[in-house]
Amino acid sequence: MRKVTRRRFLVAASSLPLFGIQSWPAGAAEFKLKFATGQDPSHPVNKRAQEAIDRIKAASGGRVEINLFPANQLGSDTDLIGQLRFGAVDYLNIAGVVLATFVPRAGIVNTGFAFPSYDVVWKAMDGEFGAYVKSEIEAAGVLLACKAWNNGFRQLTSAAREIRTPDDLRGFKMRVPAAPILTSLFQALGAGPTPINFNELYSALQTKIVEGQENPLPIIASAKLYEVQKYCSLTSHVWDPYFILANRRSLRGCLRTSKRSSPVSSTRPRMTSAPTRWRFPSRCKPI
Image (cartoon, rainbow, N blue to C red; front, top):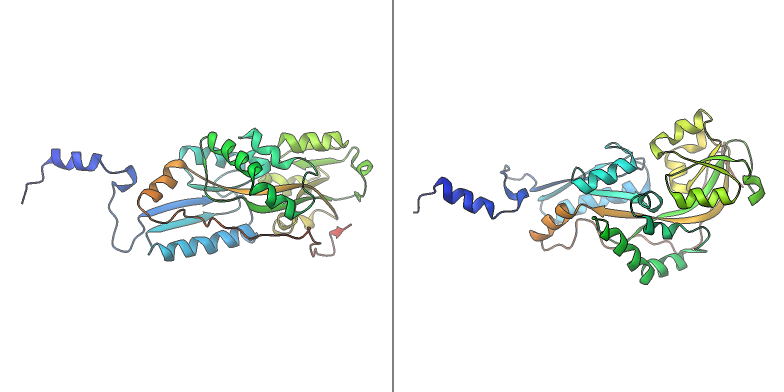
């Protein structure tokens, strides 16, 4: 048997990827990854993400362990983009309107009134249009782990006024994400949009800093915005995707040691019909 010298050990160790230079007890995970989202734990995206995480752990025999951090536990949406780039977070679920602050050309998906139905959405996202958006995102230094998920068509809510026509938006002080394309849209319609991070939205509505906001219906419901809003106008003014982004080193590290294509499923739940009415508590009235 050859004697293991310090020199031989260092030479062998230097040929291993960084994540391999560690020891772990039998039965422990080889890869421990962080998956951050900005949505409430009850939101469908977190429910489905947890289902995928459980299946990945089982399929990998426990080698891959992904911990889910919902509701901006690790920072605001914009903070998380920076954390993803530098490896503090391995995976991030981010809305298209928020990602546009980091990858401006990806914001093209949020063009106002561009998509009349989900049939049109998925035809575009699965075609050349989606390929262009993917190339722009990956050129910015992060990877797309899978196809875009459905965030949904965005709808308006208000604490005091019914919004039935564009004229009703004049002077309407409302929250929007830090997304220039949405700010421009509502400025053009005569409203007064104010960029506010999502984790500050509820308190901004509660303290009347803004009168209303816009979001997809699952977010309005899971964040309980109906507690501080009275009316919901089903405007479907913008369709918004969820992008599952991956840190390059984390994803490629897993792929080098696994025959599986990705820790996140490449398929997505589909919606093909037009947006339908959400069942709100009586305090918040769809109009």
